[in-house]
Amino acid sequence: MWDACRRRFVMIAVACLAGLSATRLAQGKTRDWRAAFIADHRCAIIDRLHMIHSQPGTVDRFLVVHPARNSAAYVQCLLEADDTEILCEAASGFYSVLEGETPPPVPPERVAVMAAAGFSTDTSDGNFQKLIVITDHARDFEHVADLLLGILYDGFGARPWTPLLYIAPLAPLERGGGKGCAFRIGALGR
Image (cartoon, rainbow, N blue to C red; front, side, top):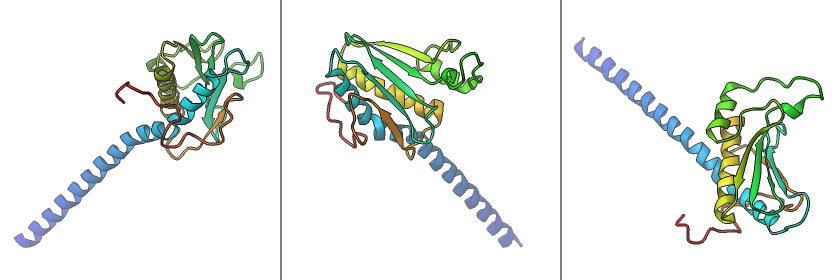
C-alpha cells in the first residue's frame, strides 16, 4: 500500500513539475515574441526611412505600416521637409468613421500602451501622435523603427507571424529588410 501511495505521489509531483516547466517555457517564448517581431521587421522600416530621408524637397515623405489583414491598425511617420523632425502617429479610430460621427472608444489597454511610448493620448481630433526631434538619422531611425513595431505588437496585437504591409511612395521596396539592414549603424556599439 505504501508503495502505491509513493508511486502516486511521485507521479503527481513529476506531472506538476512538468506542467510548471512547460508554463515557464511558454512564458519565456512569449517574452521572446516581441523581440522576434521587432527583429524581423526593423530593417524594413529603417531602410525605408533612410530612402525617404535621402530625397529632400520631395512630397510624400511618409511611411505607413500595418498588419496585412488589418489596415485600421496602422502606425505612420512623416519626415518634415527640413529633416529635423519626424511626426509619428498610431491609429486611434478617429478617421475610421464618417465626418460628424463619433469614433468608437479606444480600449484602455491601447491608451496605456500609447502613453507608455510617449504618444499623446488625446484622440478627440485625430490619431495618437509623437513628435521626434532628429539629431542623428541612423540612431533616430532605429529608435523610430523600434517604437512603431512596439506599438504594433503591444497596442495592435501583431506577432512574429503577422505579415506587415508598408506604404512609402519614396521607398517602394517589395519586401522587408531581412536579417541585415542596408543602412547599418557604425560605431554605436550595437
